[in-house]
Image (cartoon, rainbow, N blue to C red; front, side, top):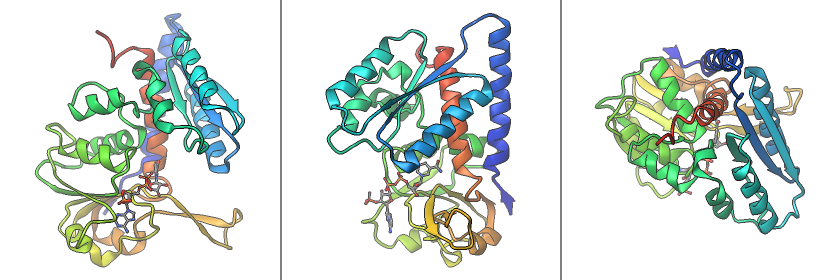
Amino acid sequence: MQLLDGKKTSHEIKQEIAEKVRTIKAEGAKVPHLAAILVGHDGASETYVASKVKDCEEVGFTSTLLRFEADITEEALLKAVEDINDDVDIDGLIVQLPLPKHISVQKVTDRIKAEKDVDGFHPINVGKMAKNLPAYIAATPYGIIQLIERYKVETSGKNCVVVGRSEIVGSPMSILMARNAYPGNATVTLCHSKTKDLNNIIKNADIIIAALGRPEFITGEMVKEGAVVIDVGITRVADETKKSGFALKGDVKFDEVAPKCSFITPVPGGVGPMTRASLLWNTLLAAQNVIYKS
Ligand code: NDP
């Protein structure tokens, strides 16, 4: 069994990005600039945004955090997005989700200029990704793709089962694994809560991508010998032995599943850090106008 070490790989990616920033600076060119919008004071969102700002500092990017109270109107938030769209110094914009209920996520996502949509949620980027055209790919699927690539995991002709069909993880992941490219060329089954006979489907998988948000759902007996297991899930589970009072659990029962695998991601230290590194990578692409150059 080999660990797909997201912590180590993301560190390498960050070093590569930092090196590129040093070159940009040496050439006197503009440093990549990421803007993040945070609405309200949700604890998890605060943590995520803080880590994104910290990541920017680490690689030498400029970052701007725009904070709004939870009672901001949809109209005012859309205006803030438009202002950033028009700001020539800002290369990439992310809006931290979830948003308060009175604001449409779809409207806000759609209002971000596709060229600055480094989260890859805009329909133009999703469509381009589905057509295998240059696009910003959502950070979590992109992180998984990069992990598979850097560990040279074989995907062609494999049976790949993706559990979970969310717009930000499962659905794009299934498209990427099925495309005619590497990583890809897998025969993909996309499962969700209405899927029948899930255990048998998983049992036949060469590659399992678990993104359902059910801690330790996938157990040893569900996985075949030699499978590649990518665990996207992160759920806080109460744990009195931890100082924080909780432990982070993946969707896979690691101790049981790992001995059967050829490759497996740990939680934490697998997909999570790769997601963070991929947002930086997308921001670098945005600053260099790689995706949308005519
Ligand atoms: P969502 O809640 O949006 O989607 C969950 C999906 O899993 C849905 O498609 C749902 O089906 C499916 N599902 C739920 N229960 C079952 C079940 N018992 N059997 C089969 N399918 C099931 O989650 P996300 O995609 O946003 O996130 C998934 C997990 O990944 C979470 O733990 C989240 O915290 C984590 N995550 C981790 C990231 C990282 O960087 N590591 C980034 C993003 C998410 P249906 O559509 O039918 O409801």
